[in-house]
Image (cartoon, rainbow, N blue to C red):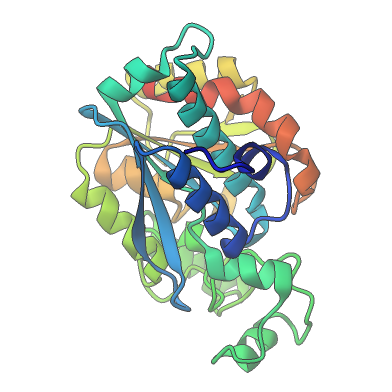
Amino acid sequence: MQHPDLKKLCTAPSLLDKEALTERIDALTDSFSFLHHGILGQSLLGQSIPLLTIGNGRHKCLYVATHHAMEWITSILLIRFVYDLCQSVRDHAKIGNLSPERLLETHTLYIVPMLNPDGVAYQMHGVEQNNPIRDRVLQMNGGSEDFSHWQANGRGVDLNHNYDAGFWEYKRMERENGTDCASPTKYSGEAPESEPETAALCNFIRMTRPLDGILSLHTQGEEIFYEGGLTPTARTKRIARCLSRVAGYKLSRTTGSASYGGLTDWCVQKEGIASFTLECGRGKNPLPHTDASAIYCRLREALFLFPTML
């Protein structure tokens, strides 16, 4: 039976922390028996990291949102995508020329809507009094209680620099720049996959081989990154061009520190998986949650068609 407030919950742009996300996931799984809710792992502070699975086809692809705390608007986008997909299956409705029912016969979609729940809690609500490392986190934040620009996880590690792809070269850059300590952004951690969030995601990717493709949602810039530090294959170029055409986002190359330690970099370099970073929306981070509907409408077709491009 469909949850009475499901459409409003999943389509109205609003603040989305872990508690609100759980409410939406519960409503979705109550309404759609073919959507499965699992747990990817635990965050540093013990919050569960949701993993949604839909479809049972042999082709597998993964969507990941909110590596960075102040980019939680990307979680809204994936929840809206899951709602639209499930509703289309139930209504036997097509998305353009795509049949979602047929898609889920040939593909299995894995969705991690919020990889960094601890960081999101900091960014929205600050650090709670009972947080065991509260004093240390406040020190990382320059003594300020304003965490609106916090990117990192619960102990000041930037999750999208914590993958084993140019990691040690990035550590050298940190030392040279004097940024080799926990902070709101850019600190890569003590070692690749040192953080429970990235370790859980990497373990899932390794256990789920072969994955046909990965889409990682960030903000902002309306760009697509896909090279991962290597010369892209003809297949990867083709997929990237398709994504660019459908989304209307430009294809770009990473530069400087952004070229090291990211999920896309690791998947391309170490796992051989076609992986793409979407920098969603345009403006200044954190993007206002009121932008979510316009961003989603522009990306909707690309999110649906991504599995068919692989």
